[in-house]
Length: 243
Image (cartoon, rainbow, N blue to C red):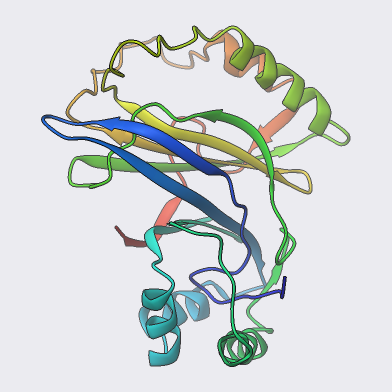
């Protein structure tokens, strides 16, 4: 497959998921091909990147629409850019479409460089899909970023695999119950960890008030092998969003 890269979709990871979606009165199957990328900005280039997001060329916009890009969000923390979007099918491009992407990539070469590998998957570290809503009217999105200590990729994956193994298995004979946290997914590129989550505010519960400086045991455990780039209790900054 040819490599590709534009500000909306510069590098991708495909995880095809078929999931029964249950909303108030709708039951349907939603197919998601999830895509993401991680970039590092060149020094002082954040505003240039923001300007590129605010003023995309017509060819790029038309191509994104043609490919069915949806649920697109682009995030910033420090000098990093993380992007997430969905398509119904795996992306592929004609020679003419590839030329559009390559032209943009050349124009942006002095703005950023890749941390994720163009045209290849970012490594999936953890996945808890839940019941994502096809419409995002009541959804609050969150993204986070950490940096692993040297050589800690496998340990991070091991700890999250144990979480997944201990998660109660859903009963296929019963409808899935709507919940607040959905599409919670974590990827890895180089020593960086990127997480994405959709929070359905209709089911969100107030967080308990904790003493100042409190860190829950899981976070304390994970701080043995990583440090935070985005705020630990918050999110990366959302630069662009298109549901």
